[in-house]
Length: 296
Image (cartoon, rainbow, N blue to C red; front, side):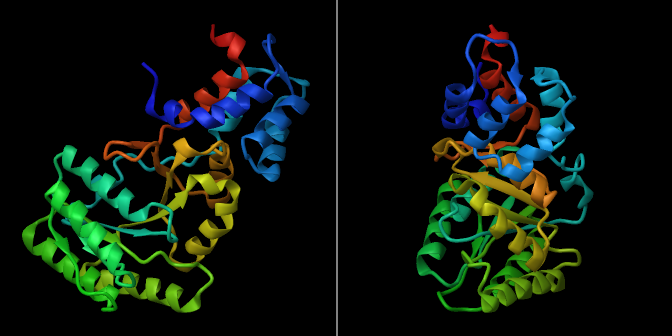
């Protein structure tokens, strides 16, 4: 049965198959360079991959697999289980259009299926539409939500949600934030304020700050990610819209630059189309397209 990640990579794998040599059980380093660049792996990352391969011009699948897997940082095992005092608070950040609010709903759906209780916080108070969108998702998923009117203090929404969830023994709190342009100082300061207020509501909160990146942007999202990390310190990444792009190779560059784990990838628009990122499935899918003759 084909994996969800491989299905989501269909466009990227198509580009790789077009670039990969046919009928051979190996690729040369020059051919590999072209293949990786076509899949939107950054030039700097490609150079690093080639450097860590054995000196032979013929690149074997097992050697390339070893190098590619090394580009991904793994999440500590049972990370969420470290938080014994409920709730576990996650702050979701990213620019407009990355799919942040929809991803929050998909996360809530995942957590509910795992048996956790969930509360949403509509702290994107810059847009009335964002508040309404999250309210509709809360109704659809049958989870509580804390919200206010457009223009109100977003950090107050985050505070109220954490206090309410603590009193009700809710397992997870997912806090939406405005789609901030990372080069706007006032919005960066607002984001830092939300982080400070969360810690006042509950010591150690937010326990995880997740950056949502639009997969269709490819490597152009790297500077955006670096800037957000400098503002608040990112704990993990979610890459959305992976199914809609041929730039899936950018995940190597993003993971390498940020040194942060990719937690989930979006492979469709439905509630269940957010899947845990599996670096081995991701890398093997890439390799199956490069070394297609070996998989027969």
